[in-house]
Structure formats: structure tokens, C-alpha cells
Length: 518
Image (tube, rainbow, N blue to C red; front, side, top):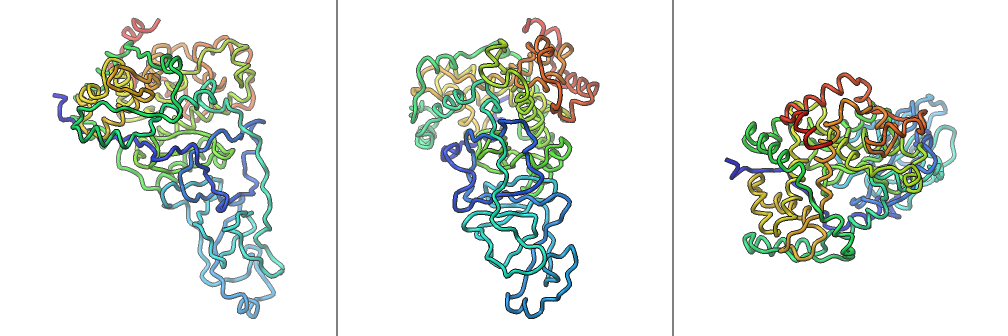
């Protein structure tokens, strides 16, 4: 029954290592000086760790609070001087201009577009900037290719000189999701094959009967790979049951995706949804938003050029699933990261001092629950497929794994991506072996659901990057003021009802989880 099922979910491998690229190139740097910045955040909050930008140029213009920005189409300077009137209205910095145009809310940009959403609509400018375009005094712009030409002195409001914006405090490394991000980043960088395209071509040419031989720029130490090469079968039965039930209900993943996810969103609508969500969470202006198709996952929350940055894969941004992704990345990872900075265990030394457990699988499990929270049909398909694929990779060669995953995924390109994720880090994929990171999602989900009645989810967020198992003993040691809690956690009764719905839809029982997790 499961044969012939077509799955359209795609995972994208960047053509180049995006962590080596800068979000803003030196010749096209555009800086904002506005009152509505993130300087109110805790000390140590905005340090460059790594960048993920892939665009040729990106825009970060913000408008000043309580003022509307307008683009004007002026006449030539000489004609303007002849016809300039002595009196000007307070809202018109250059007097009456011809064809005034209101700036619209964020619209579609070139691939890899980026902006920082502030409390007024952002302005998007492509490079180079025409010399005749004027801005209101809300902006300070720097960068050689975007510097406006000097204007004659006159009374009124002008584009300010190349003012240097306030530099926000740095973000410490523990803002990221892991317990020791610098170390984990090295692992994740090292396990990406450098010959992926060549091996994929060989694999497809051999009609899926070839086992790729991956090469790496910085091969991992065998001991490190061994640590991440142990797969678990603890929740294997549950992962298979979840996928089978999804296919039974919808016939194929494609039907499930369309019925519950809705249509793919344009960039304009993505900007609108993101802005609306950030307003609801009270974090508008704190996070740079970057849209791309060059991302392995659906989204990621990182630090780019000193700014918290949300990168969204536009090829997977669906109407009814986008807010779940925002709850995952902002409502969980970002808020727990910000709260963690206030706590005495905010760095690696503090974690050792207080004997904290690893923040995973709690971190990714909680975020994954929030991804499906409030969905019409919150099936845990993705977490289940990732868990299953990793375990099977530990038992099979690449070609055998590819055939096996075909029970659930028919599309060969999608299968290839899932198999590569599970086999990354290994050179000779004819041998059994896996990279076990992708099992953390389902593992974390089921552990949290098992203990949902005894977990204080409000504290789990405000304490920062901690395991749910550490909450009770840490609550008396924690800072409790000026912490962030997402809006969906403020109605505890409704939140708990949604957790029960996830249990019911995936046909999980308390007895089943209690027998597995104790």
C-alpha cells in the first residue's frame, strides 16, 4: 500500500558553504541609525558568530518610529531652485514635489532578500541607488555605492550625513541552540561533503545502485564521528506508526501537505506574516529576516553580522505552516536564547558549575511541538521520518537506505536529500553508519509529551537553554525579572489542550510513553 507514494517536500543543500559569506558586502553596506533598535537587550547580545547570507546585496533600512517615509521624484536641481517656495509644511521636508509616492510594505525582492522589520514599514532599495532619490531624516545611510549626492544647504529636513549607528552589545556564543556552539559548528561544517553534486550524478547514473564516496574539506576526528554515529531504536515503532497513519489518512504526503499546509506563499505574504507575528510577540525591530531557497532546513535562527537573523526557506513556506515555523524559531529558540543570557548558567562555565544536562533533546523537542501547535491535523511526519532514516542508515549502506526509504518517499531527489542527511560525515557509504542529530526531534517531542502534566512550560522558557529535567532545581537560582514568554504560552489551559490533541492525532497514549520513558 505504501509503494508509489509521492513526497514533494524538498531539502536544499547550498551550492556554496554559506557560513563563509557575509550578509552585506563592503561595497554595498547599508546601515540604519534609528531609535528603535535592540540596544535594550542584555549585555553581550550581538556578537558575530557566523554568517549565513547568500544574496549579492541585502537591504537593512528601517524607518523612524511615529514617522512615515516617502520617496520623491524631484525635478532637476536648477529647476528646483527656481521654483522653490519659501514656506514648507512640517510634514514635507523638501516642499511640494511632483508625483509623491507612498512607500509600500515589504514586497518581493531578488533571491536571497533580507530586511530588518521595524515598527514602521521597511524600505527596500536595490543597488545602485539612483542619485535623485531623497529620503526623510529618518535614515542614516553609509556605503560607497549607496551614498546620496550632497544637496545645497537650505532650511528643512535633509538626509543626515553619514552618521555612524549605535553599535549594539555583542551576542555571546551561548545565544545559539547548542551547549557549546563553537565546537558544534565545527562538526556541522566538517560533515558536509565537498563532492556532493558529483556523487549524486554518479548515483543517479547507476540507477541508485552505487554507494557514494564522500570527500570532506576537514574530516572529523574518528572519535567525534563515533560519538554521533550511534543511532537509537527506542522510538522506531512510533516513527513508523506516525508515517503510516499519515499515508492512511491522506493517501500521500503531497495530499497531506496541500490539505493542512495550504499554498506556498509569495515573498510579499511571507514578509506580512512575519511582521504580524513579531508584532504579536513584541520583538519587531530585533530580528533581521532573510529569505532564501539555499537552505537545508525550513528555517534557522542564527547571528549574522552581529544581529539575530531568521533565515526562511521560501520553497517550504506554506500558508498554514508558516506561523508554526515562527513559533519554532522565534517563540522557542530566540526567546529561550535571550532569556538564557540573563541566567547564571549563560556560558559554558556556568553550565558546568550548576551541573546542567544538555539542552537537547528538550530544545528541539519543544520547538518541534510548537511547529505543529494549533495545526488542524498536527501529525509529526517530519520528525518521524528523520528519526527512522537515521536508524536505518546505521544498519544499511547508502543504496540500501535509499531503497528502504522508498516505502514512504517516492521522489528520488527528496530521498537523496534525506539519505545524505543521515549519512553525512561518512566517507565510504557502502558501510552501515549514520550521523544521529536528526533523531533529536522526535526524541525530544515524546519525552516532553510523556511528562507534559508535570512540566512548567512557562519556567522552561524563562530559564533559558535548559532541559525540562533541570527546571525544578534551577527555579530558585534563576533570575526572574525582564524575561520573555511567547504569547501562545500565556493561556496555559489552551496550550495543554493542544498537547493532548497532538497525542490524540498521532495515536500516542500515556501508557505507551510511560512504558518507553521512565
